Every structure is written in C-alpha cells, then in structure tokens.
Amino acid sequence: MTKTAKGYSNTIWNGVLRDEYAHSTSITNISQQQRSIISITDVKKIYKLGDIAVNALDGVSFDIFEGEIVFIQGPSGSGKTTLLNLIGGIDTISEGNIRVCDDTLRSMSAKQLTMYRKQRLAFVFQFYSLIPTLTVLENVELTMELMKFPQKKIRKDAEHFIEMVGLKDRRNNFPSQLSGGERQRVAIARALAKNPDILLVDEPTGQLDQDSGVKIVDLIRTIAKAQNKTVILVTHDLEIIKFADRVIKLRSGKVVSDSPLEGSAQIESYI
Image (tube, rainbow, N blue to C red; front, side, top):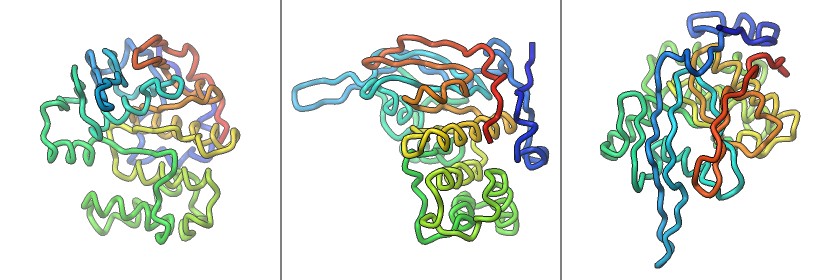
C-alpha cells in the first residue's frame, strides 16, 4: 500500500518542488521499489598497518533500492564512512563487489570511476566544503559549470536550487556570513544541482546543534522524496533515525541488523 508523507505539503517547499524537477512525494515499501540501484556483495576492505591487517569491512552484503533513504549507523570505527567511500568510488574494494546501476566498480578504471562520481553521485560532507571566496549562488553555479550544463540555464537553475533549500534571500552572502545550518543547506543545493541518481551524505549533523541537525535531515528527506533520489546517509545521531526508510547497523565491519522503519513516512516536517 502506498503511503503519502505527512507534513511535507505544508512546508516552504510546497510549490517549489511541484515543477519540472519534481517526480513524486509518495513513499513505498522496500518490496514495492522499482529496482535495486546498489548491490553490495561480500565486500571486504582490508588496511595494512605494517604487518597487521585491519578489516574495516568484513563481508558486507545488502541491496539498496531506487528512491530509498537508507541510514548507516554504528559506533566509531564500525566501517560506516569506509563503506560510503567504497560506494562513492573514492576508495578501492579489497574483496567482493559493488554494483551501482549498471556499473561494477571493481572493473572500472580510474577515468571511469571519475565519470561515475561525476554523473551518478553527489556528496554532502560533514564540514560543508564550500569555497569561502564565492557567494552562495556562485558555489552552486560552479558545480553546474563543472558539469558543463548549458550556460544560459545555469543562473536560473542555481537560483531554483537555492530557493528549494530556503536561502533565496541569502544567495549573495558568503559562507562566512552564514550559520552552520545555512552552510549545510548550500551544500545540499550544490549537490542537487548535479542532478545525481544517488546522494551520499556523511554525518550531516556532526557540526550542528540538535534542532538545526533535525531540520537539515528533514530537508534532505523532503527533497529526496520529491525528486525520487536515493540517499545513503552515515550517522551516529539517534535523533534523526526517524527520517530513514531503513537503518543498517554496522559493528566491527559487519552488518548486525538491517531493518525498515515502519511508519517512517508519517513523521511531521520540522521545516
């Protein structure tokens, strides 16, 4: 049975998301998803520290489905960020395989991995990674220029994404003139400007107070559901778990639980 997310139609995103970029605000159960977009099979990541081999990931297997919002949770050192880096093609797999859409990561060259990251993915980092000498608008525009989008559309589309994250009145400000939550919103707008299939999000609340952190993750979920983006979000923050469709818990490099969150679509928006 398809459920519609409550709360989102009453936020500032109402109207902004109902345009050429929007797809659907409905949320389906995992069994009803269209296809597996990421398939992780017996993945191991082994680091050598002198004569010592450290298993950062030890035989991890699961699938992620199109449009799903999956949180990876676990204590420090459990392999969360390592797994995100492997999916992102930033680090190399020691054993096993990861397939993303039709791409098998272990068989890809460095050039192919660069194109994979450029075309399929967008990253949202804990520390924002904004260019301090560029305005909000220029930070978003630069991403679109690097993607070689049509020049005549870049300004209009950049302003669209900035409005989407609620920063229309701050578009000419520099990062130093923004709060931590506002900087993270810019990072989200910049990521969305690439029009990725998959958002990889690493500890988005790590530098924020609790209220700002909840609003940021609410924003990510709202936009991802409206645009049918797949999200993999690494976190240790228990306050934001309710925004996930599914939570995968890691411990010592192994999956210890993999559970859908029943009723996660029924949370009220905090935005």
